[in-house]
Length: 184
Image (cartoon, rainbow, N blue to C red):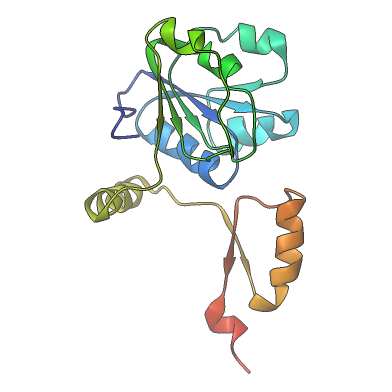
């Protein structure tokens, strides 16, 4: 987010996907003073996005009317979805010179070149920052009380946790309690 100057108060951020990365993007966006819109395939995540995470707006990405209502309204979009999905509908939501940053890494990216040329839009990717950037992020999280939402599990629960991951039945990350899991 810092690399693309997604920390400018008053700007608008779209977050595609409300999973492990997406919920953190919402928290960072709000801490930076951005107007945050969550873009999800599921209406079931609306209340959580707005009331618990504090997003300003929510739209179901398959609802053509909702998406059209957001045309050219976002300065930035962070795409946290790892599954394959269309990109053109999201590119139309970006303002001129807007940036779509991929952090979820689907297996392929398909879009019309016109999606980039109309309004000088940019697509970028990011895996992780270096040591300095990571420390700055952790310091920011501590200062702004930004913590991931997790579910702590014992190592013996790992098979069930994997099944739940496949069913998309986790909010938002599993964390294995190694210390208590290994007590005899």
